[in-house]
Amino acid sequence: MANVVVVGAQWGDEGKGKIVDWLSERADVIARFQGGHNAGHTLVIDGKVYKLHALPSGVVRGGKLSVIGNGVVLDPWHLLNEIATVRAQGVEITPETLIIAENTPLIMPFHGELDRAREEAASKGTKIGTTGRGIGPAYEDKVGRRAIRVADLADAATLEARVDRALQHHDPLRKGLGVEAIDRDALIALLNEVAGEILPFAAPVWKVMNEKRKAGKRILFEGAQGALLDIDFGTYPYVTSSNVIAGQAATGVGIGPNSIDYVLGIVKAYTTRVGEGPFPTELEDEDGNRLGTRGHEFGTTTGRKRRCGWFDACLVRQTCATSGINGISLTKLDVLDGFKTLKICTGYELDGERMDYLPTAADQQARCRPIYEEMEGWSESTEGARSWADLPANAIKYVRRVEELIDCPVALLSTSPEREDTILVTDPFAD
Image (cartoon, rainbow, N blue to C red):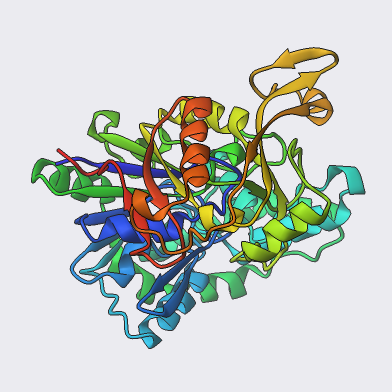
């Protein structure tokens, strides 16, 4: 059986939620392998809208095992609130349907406080555009070997030792930022309160995942954010704090890279990003506003308006390479309906020279100017199309040109938020 990794191939918000849900119907296990609750997935199923941040998208599908892997940083209070919300929508969530890796680091209240204090203290040119939910500081503590992990909740002495080690680092930081010291006893009390609700979901995920793989179960690895926000390969420092690319799927749950059979990259038919950082094809004109309005471009987590621009084939070609993407799912094609002329970025001009990739240096990224290829648009509607025959000729030409420019085939084509409005070209789960 094929195991599939789904990754965003731009700056996130590409429509991963719908595609993961669409694929999860044929999967047995759906696993989150990185990120925190700073990214959101919106699922529309039979007219009912589910907004998920920490929970894997598979929880809304009966008979599936959902997994939160060790590559995730987890806010236990947010998770429990999200579980309560989804349960109220009629979804059953139990330790039989959801498991959390015992070695998953926890996001503490002081992580969010530090995140926000740093952003407030940053000068205008150095703000990252963080959601302020503590994801970055939590990953810092993981790497600094002072994280409090799920398994630590089970033993009082261990938990206190972990808290003390964390506070040795955080209290001096807070003092320097003018934030009061952490109330140690109150924090331990909060953790003890939540322990009884979190620990029933705890499991040796690496063991479970390997057993499922050996049993021939289909596994769907669900990424958050997009590859251009990867801590190593994104537009640093305007990135998230974890590895987003497909290789993280293996280490993020404790399974070998040879277990990954297909990588599906989710790609919007134009380009958006939230927060600060370079954006070569950004449009600050009527076309940009039109894309944002038609595409309902507001963040699931923050509600922030997304910056919009033309499709950047140069960047997507780059992310297809770093994630080893086998095929893409092209989403929101319908947002381009009615444009007389469409543009695709095929490269950049940097100081008089042509570049076929986005350079690493931040100052060079800022100076890159897009080189565009123009294509004729279409007036017909593509919304809800479920076959190639339903698409206008110019829409098909646009899709084919995208494939050529990114050197990667389209496996799926999404034409609305509804899960059935999808054109299947290549089944990622095919044996």
